[in-house]
Length: 162
Length: 292
Image 1 (spheres, rainbow over the protein chains, first blue to last red):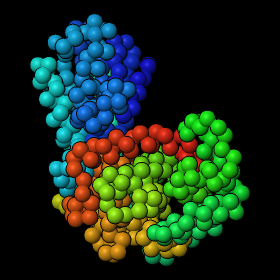
Image 2 (tube, chains in turn orange, purple; image 1 turned 90 degrees about the vertical axis):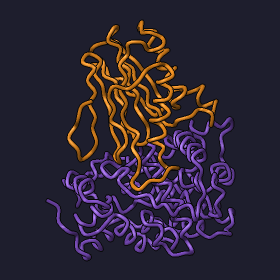
Image 3 (spheres, chains in turn brown, orange; image 1 turned 60 degrees about the vertical axis):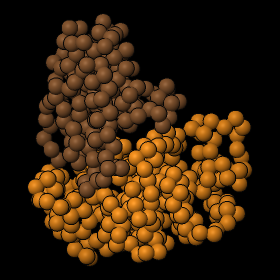
Image 4 (cartoon, each protein chain N blue to C red; image 1 turned 30 degrees about the vertical axis):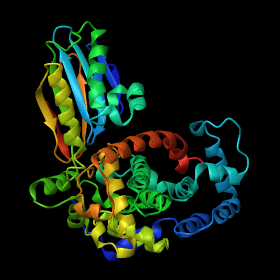
């Protein structure tokens, strides 16, 4: 089985049934997952910040890092597997976006990431069918391409599915 | 089932930890003084052959991509900056503490050092980007050392992760610090403070170790520094670099804004710079505990 590991700001996709896409320890970062039932392709991006306007050079080098550049980049990547370029027919799931305890508006990057992602998705007419967002713990996320099954883990908790 | 650590046991644990090397200890003393001279830092390093060799090796490593090989220690230090020198010195003599697997937090070996380095970079960025009147170099060093207590109590917390997580999610107002204290009688800041005393660390560093989760309790003199590391620590965890089960399970003290002003945009820029700077330093400093 091939394992595609995504770091912060990475994105990737696969249609090989034996592959698994995985990203470790999402704190305030959000993992955006696209599943295309038609081509049986799965894509994921590990988004760190909501808005690329703070550093255009970084966005050009690592588009997966920012919500507004990650979604177009992931969609484009998935067209190479025959997926629709505007994400038509894709199933969207979101995980991560945690916040530390007693946090204030400034430090709610997790929440702002999730909101920014949803806004971009709406502009494509897409929306998440399932999400596991917020709370105050970090999540490791993996998805098997064959089953499209998302498994989440966090120390001290039994694994769960989305 | 975990059991409480007695005061005597804690002292024994602290005494079993190797002392800092004389040069690391003197570097920490020297660089925590606000008006110290870089020449004194250079002289200190020059008198320690091992440290000199390590510094030269790191400045010439691929991470810094210098065109010409640096052979003089003065140039190496002015290029790297004293915070990196302090980082190398601490990593060299306390590497085994930083590289230790924190099984009591279900955290792999090396995670603590990565978390500490992220916290150090983030604390420094907090200071420079907010314009707060705090030494950014000192914030970096304090960030490196803030969680040293975790490696002291981790073994005693083994098997407690599920209980700790459960405690925090069911009891209103509890965070991981409370859970540690309930489980083993001490939290990691108290344990770290005992080591800070044994190591005779400068007072401001000891205060950061003791109060980085409760900055309001720090003495007024050092409180803004403690707040800077408090934020740096939280930023490191938000970026996905915690130490296992306790990550994100601490309270953010809202009163930080009395000491440090940060807008949402500044915070985003801090987080981005932490990623960039960490990538640069990770490869060169990370192996500090393993190969001298």
